[in-house]
Length: 196
Image (cartoon, one colour):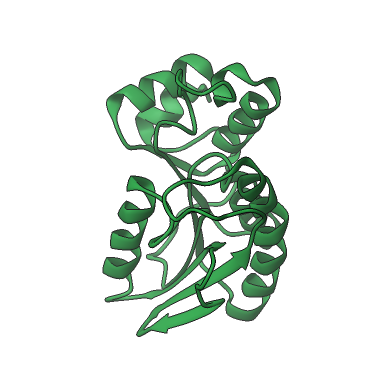
């Protein structure tokens, strides 16, 4: 299946799991979650809080200075993993993004064994996508990927995924390996179709 029809239909070609009955336990993988980050983190906080009204939700995210490693708010659990050089709440450093992968993958394996999630939903193709996708594949559950824009195309950044070969290849693999792909805008969708 081509990426065009995958994004148009809301799913990607490489996904193997089926989205069956409603998930009762969801793992959200996102390298930014308030108070860290900007709009993408806020959107996923709102999504997690809304979902946790009815189902069990665990958010796997980065830990910044002064933040607890684990928090529980009713049916919402937040698990924060250590990352390198995350000194600013509003902006991630390159070392913090690169170190999120091994840190979140190790913690994610422990969580997947402990909780038996029905679905993994990843926010941002990079840097969250590789660990979210691998966790879903290794444990045989569906993977949903949300694209936010800068994880697909950001002409203001030298290391934008669309012009950095290793990032471009990573984003392509995450998109094509996911069972569903959601773009936050028609522009992000169009760029994903054209580039990946």
